[in-house]
Image (cartoon, rainbow, N blue to C red; front, side, top):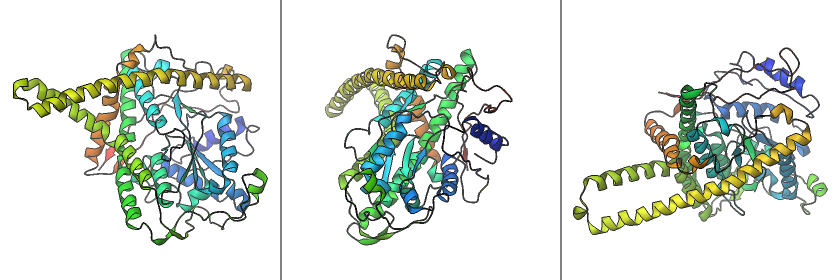
Length: 463
């Protein structure tokens, strides 16, 4: 919870009173406002909460088996997610304390009530995260939701709190990757995290405009994470320069008396002691996989610069072709235009194929979540929170992705990267998300009732 919210403690106690039997223990922290050196945002909130939570685990055995899950307030995780994380933690115990658990996301809660451009932008965002989550992928960048070993978080010094960490998920991934000299272990958790699209309560044209405005500001905040490319270049250069050196590193050595992947024997392993969220280093020879490092930078380029390059090249080539007679265009350049036109057509067809595959992915995710809520007896309280798709209803989505990608991808990226020439700070405010429809839930004044206020993403540049 944040201190600047006057109802923070009231909300926390309401949630604790509403779900006392659902968790072994519920605690909350209040992140003070105006901490020196901190920038407002998710990363600084997590940093504060993680430091408080870390101090609760003094027993070494408990610390080894503590996994921290980071998610947004609107995230809905299946119980299978935590079961899978637990299973993977013990099955791969030798690398458990250098492991990051990554899951795909799905926007399946209110996609039917948001404008098509907003819906498609989030489908593309979802697809970008999915693109790296294939079997044996060594570079898996998390999107909003992930879990991390407490020991790994401690040994890299916790979450950064400066303006460079506004893209908290990517920044923490990069921090762990370079702190372990590329030896960060990745476990993909095939239990998608359900998310909400940004939306507006307004109706008609005004609602369409306000939802688009909110999504653009969210996109600007996402693209502000291009700062992480500079961070990665700095850390990557250091890693390359010191390859083969014996240096003090932040990741732990292999566990002692390792005798297999059995859960019981894994619990008896011994590791070097550590202190809460402080770096515990030892000497190691720096070696890394050059191919993985190349893939990492390629994905950073795809995320932060490719959208701008595509838009600029498409517009400039179209304008040149429009105002220049074919007879005056050099043969080689004309061939390049023809060849890239073919590539654009193939790319469009590939995107059609992606949307076709996405239909099955979306249906599987929302059906599984609905079935789980029925078994848990919570379906009645969540009516209206399940969005199904059908190609007949969503045919427009297949054809407007170039517009959505430009408005919520290329333009915010260009704006963010131009702003980075004179500032690294962006005012961070939360995006508007839909409220839970309380069907059969607690009434006003009863335990569990939480008063909710609208909160728009009013991100703005700070000079």
